[in-house]
Structures are given as structure tokens and as C-alpha cells.
Length: 208
Length: 178
Image 1 (cartoon, rainbow over the protein chains, first blue to last red):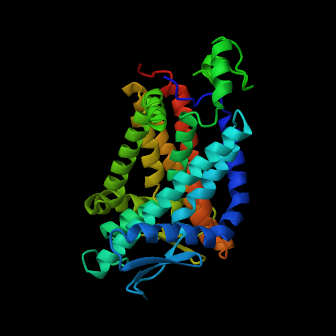
Image 2 (cartoon, helix red, strand yellow):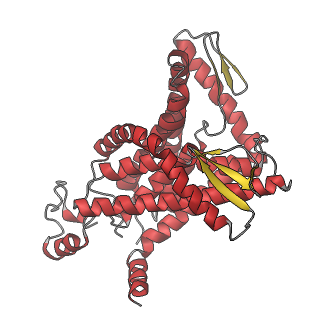
Image 3 (cartoon, chains in turn orange, brown):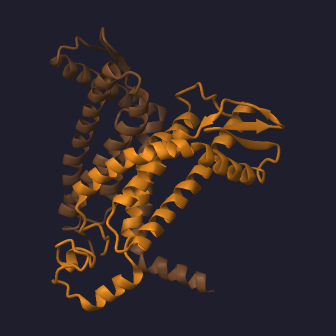
């Protein structure tokens, strides 16, 4: 079964990913306003299908829950639900790829998935806040409540979410160029050195 | 019709990988709900474990003369106090690793080996993180929040992933089921 995880120099990859993460972190921090604006606007538009009185208003690096034109709760800090994004970007950029196009495609797919998850998190946050206003859910101050633990669990698990998306991109072959992979499969013997340059046998690397 | 056909081809070609990730996601969510959310498990298992972690952190920093004592989940010393809260107990990292090991189609022996060395190793890494955060809080208080939120947790998850990949390559793939 081809899971495609073999053939990478993992320690070097993780060291490079940590260095890239530290470099990308300030860029992400200064882009939070834009991320908040786009994600908040999309989530607000989606939420109007459930409750037209509610808007999710981006405000700087946070979003606010607005009911009938009035802000109803503390703002949600967007950094807490998006810090998986720089981790994912660092991991994707550090991963060896058959071509720059394949790497950029993997980066775009990964960022799109993270973005969709962020919008889902905002919609869930709006729903929980709405339930709190109707006293159907415990307030955020109750740190043992189900909604607090689940929602903050998503925040705490941002690195885990990023890692799972990255593993999925590797195992689904997003880092391999389609044409080169097919021609490699046709011409390279299973015991021959892998054409990707890893130094391993083809059957233990790209042909796994 | 073409996009539908391409989607079907993609699903067929990657069926086993997608099955793995579906199972991975399910086990991760189930473990997280079990250990991280259900109040009885949290108060009966995780909170007492967090107190043990606090005692372990106090014991390690006392080796270097910190004069710290553990009070519940709080590590208290004359220089700095640190509360080990939800998210600092290593539950996410352990759940991630556990889900990866259990979801991969391999033998139960390989899974047992993975869990026996991986989970304690991740907890040891988490303990090292907590000791590191104690010293960051003491010597770099202005950076403590940023390092706690964005760096320490990330490094623990990346190291857990490295352990998972090590297991996949050394044990998981070797005993892989057809």
C-alpha cells in the first residue's frame, strides 16, 4: 500500500520547518487583520442563512458577534483559531517536492483547507454565542463547560490540525508532479535508485 | 461529468489513504472528547495527572535550586508561579500520536510497540516543555505568552509527529497489512 511517507529526511525537514515557522510567524501576525476580514465576512454571509439577525463583524485582529446591529459579546481573537496556518505553510515549504508547481499547489490546497476550517470555527463560535444569549449554553467564563472545552480544544489543537493536513497532502501525493511520477513509475526499476535523489531504492521511496 | 469522473478516480486511487485519514480523524476526535472534554474523565484522570505533572516540574526545577512546590496544578516558587492548565497536559499531542498508531493498517504488535514507547516519550517531551516554560516565564516574562501560545505547543506537536513518522517507517510499514 502506497502511503508515500518514506524517502524524506525527516529530522532535517522538521528543523527546517521550525526555522521557517519562526520566519513566517511575523508575516502571519501582520496579516491577521486581512485574514480576520476575509474569514469574518465569509462566516457572516454563511451564518445569515441560519439567522439573518446575526452578523460576524471583523474588527482588527478579532471578530465580534453582532445581533440586531449591537455587539453582544467579547470579540474572538483570530490568532487563537488561525495559528495553524503558519505551521502548515512552514511544513509545506520545508517538504521536498518534485517541482515548484507541485509545492505551490500543495500550499494552496493546504491553505484553502485551513481557511475553510477557520470559517467553520467562526460559524460554530457564533452558534455557541447565540445559544449563550438564549441561556442554552454555559457562558465562556465557565471553563468546564462542554462548549468552552470543545471550542478551545480546536484552538489548542491548531498545530495538530496543521500536521494532519500536511500528512494528508504528502500521502495523497500532492508534492509529486503528476506527469513525472507516472513516467518515473513506467521507466524506473523497483530496486533502482529513486529519481527524486533521496538515495533510497525506488520501491522504498516514491514508488512505495 | 468530467469533474465527477475525476473525483471518483481520485477517491478510488486514494481509497486506503482516505480510509486511514477518516479513521485517524475519528480516533483523534474520540480520544480528545474522552480525555479532554468529558468532565468525569477530566476530573478523574486528567486533573490528577496534571497534579502529578506539576510535582514532576517542581522536582526538576528544584534540581537547579528553584525552591518550588506543587500546589495542585500550580508550580509555585519565590521567583515564579506557573499554572498547568488545559492544553498544557500533553493530551492533544498524545491523542494525535495514538490516533496515527491505531489508524494505520498494521499488526497489533507494531501498534503496541508504538504506544509503549511513543506515549511516554511524548509525555517526557511535554514535561521538558513545561520546565522550559517555567524558565521562560522566570527570565523572559515579556515573551512568555507568545512562546507559550505559538512556539512551545507547536514544537511538542512537531516532535510527536516526528515520533509517529519514525514509528510508521520502522514498525508500521514493516508489519503493514495488505
